[in-house]
Length: 293
Image 1 (cartoon, helix red, strand yellow):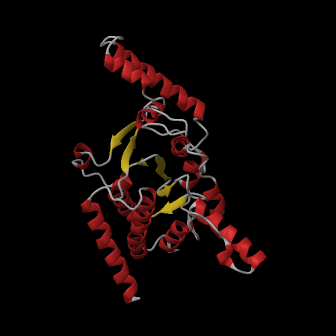
Image 2: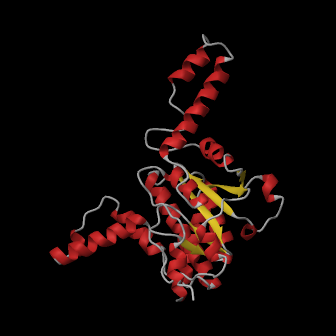
Image 3: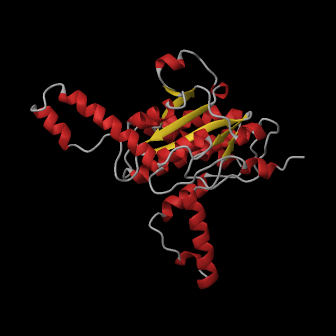
């Protein structure tokens, strides 16, 4: 007999450190410590030099070239963020390529997402991986406390929701390196009794529990992100991972998580009117569902 918990433990999952989500995204995709910040910085510097050489072809005395030299790198910054070009070049080392999921060329192929092997997703400066291991899909977001099992039914809904919230999604093409989790999960499917939390939620819960124990009042906990964490906690409900109806309900609930987090980060502003209308419609559906319960 295989221990289902041990099967989940076989999945490599780097948690968020600083702003190194590009590194975590790549290593979670490849299932190992394949890239370090130094490796990715080296690729970024190489790209910067190639761009500089192309600009120099127009004349090193030109105004465009002098302006280019004064600008910061577009491939990395001091926070640890790396561009899509860096990620693409890093994956090319392993014979892997990126295809834009919502491009006309890819969408015209009418490929069911469950038939792919992996996706990487980007919103502003955050990157994360969604990957198939064995015959099951996992959300390997470094902001989670662990891998999150995703049913086949929910995968398409999840990708659609990410697109609605402004994420760029890329399909990974090529042969991913062999890994322990692929071998173990290829033999036996796993079940997840409790979904992982966002790292901030777990810290908030721990802090709240400590404050209640010491002061007897949970409201003593002061956190500048408290309202955001409460909203996120309310939007993530425990459901049966094999229940397709529950997956659909969770897709509606999670729609609010992305819009609330994006709203907090951008001062409540939306990218466009259409997205706001869509989010409002989902809010109405979500409320109607709870009213029926």
